[in-house]
Structure formats: structure tokens, C-alpha cells
Amino acid sequence: MRIAILGTGAIGGWFGGRLVEAGHDVVFVARGETLAVLQDRGLVLNDAAPIPVRAYGTLAEVPRDVDVVLLAVKVTAETDLAALLDGLPPSAAVALTQNSVEVPWLVANVVGKERTWPGVVRAYFHHIGPAQVEYHGGPMTYSFSPWDGSADERSEPFAAALREAGVEASVIDDIFSDVWLKAMLVTSTGALGALTDQPMAQLRGRYRGSLEALMRETYETALANGIDMPATAVEDTLAFADRMPAEATSSMQRDLRDGRPNELDAQVGAICRMGELHGVDTRLHDLMLEVLG
Image 1 (tube, rainbow, N blue to C red):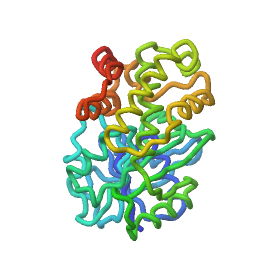
Image 2 (cartoon, rainbow, N blue to C red):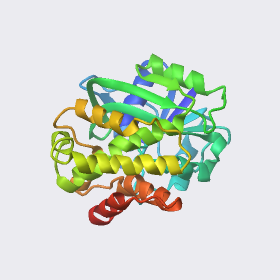
Image 3 (cartoon, helix red, strand yellow):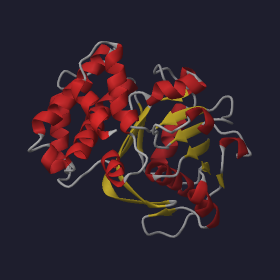
Image 4 (cartoon, rainbow, N blue to C red):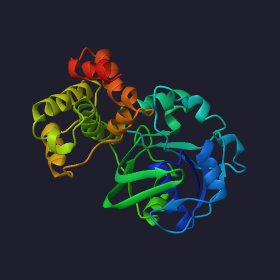
């Protein structure tokens, strides 16, 4: 199986590097300083020696067709998905990693639903510099599926390759439910954390009522969009937040704090738009989007 990693941040760097170490046919697509570092030094995972990799500036420059493109870029308000995916081989699938309920639809608008594989990553990484990623334990899972849950001859081999690389990857039946469950946690904690400038301990303590209300807005929006959600989804997600490290913060929260390109629109804005589509009251998400934007 031939795999391209589009975006060499935390997820793309770790997944791609481990796939290379496991002996798989992997290329990286990056730009700017990250591309130069990949080509000159290689990819560094934790404190290990650099991993030599093949890296290109665009998908169109990759000399061989690939079976799967792992889209591991952060989608911000400035992201041009059509440009990023220009040069995608005509039969390649695009496996997603973004924390957004809207990105699967945006990618499908570019490449078609039949080639879009929504996915969910659960892991704790730190992107500490160009082509350099740290991971120090905790969950390492990736669930994904072809759009309609149908069989695809590439999906299980892709999952198997990731498992060989140390990722607990699985093809699941109801991927959209998992996408919304992940959003219930990361979008709510990211927005509230950015607004209050507080870590998880405060969000699940002092601001617990607001956190639960944000999660419930996501839950109601999911149901209105036809997503099959567990009846205890909000309670279960709060319980998961209770088990997270007290000082944990989200990448969106850190990006907003540091003035970097961020996923506010892709995460919070997506809930607002998909709620408005079906007349769901998302007043807290609307407020977060206005204040934090």
C-alpha cells in the first residue's frame, strides 16, 4: 500500500514516521520550512535519530500514484482544500483526521463522498518544531470508515498498516457518530478554555455548567443532522473530561492564545452552521465564535 501524508504536524508526523519505520511505502507533502527540514534532516520523533523520508511540495509532484492520502493539516479559515488536494491521484482515498464535524463535507465537495474517509484520532502529541513531534504515552487510536460505511478494499489494509506502526486503527460502522462525539469534547473544551484561559481542571470544575451546556448544544445539533448518538453522550463525555489531566489544554485554545492560525471556525463555526441549518439553538457556540473571532 502506498500512502501520502499531507501535513507533517503532530498527527501527520507521528503516524507517517512510524509507518516509515514499519517499512511501509510513505511520502510526505509539506511546504516552507517543514519541507526543507524533511528533505535535509528527516523527521524526528521524540528524541530518536532523524528518520530519512521522501518529501514533496505538492501532491502533483509525488512521482507515483498513492492509494490513500492521510489529510493531517489543520483546517483554518484560510485553508484552501481544493488547492491542497490538487494533484490527488484519480482513485486515491482521502483519510481525515480533523476535529471538525464539517470538514468531511468540505473534502467531499472537492473529491467526492466515495473517496472521503471521515476519521477520528485520539492521542496526545506535541508538535515542537518543523518535522519534530513528541508523544509520551496515553491513547493512540484512529477510527475511520469510507463515507457510507461500505466495504473498500483499501480500508482494512490501511488500518493494518497503521496497527503495524503502533496506532490502534479500526474501520468502524458509524464513523459520523464518532466524529460528533469527539467534537463534543474538543470543541467544547477548546472554546471554553480559550474564553476563560483556564485548563481542564477549571473547565470541569468552576465552569462545569457552561461546559455541559456547550456539549448539549453539540448533542442536539448532531441529532438534528441525523446522527445516531448515544442517549448518555453528554454524561459520558463529561466523565471522560473528568479523567483528563488537570492541566490539559486544547490545541485550538493554545493557538488562539498565541495568535496562530486556528480551528475556531472549523470547530465552533461548524456547530453554529450545522445547527442553523436545522433550527437548533446554538447560542453559546454563536457567542464563542463572535467573542473569540
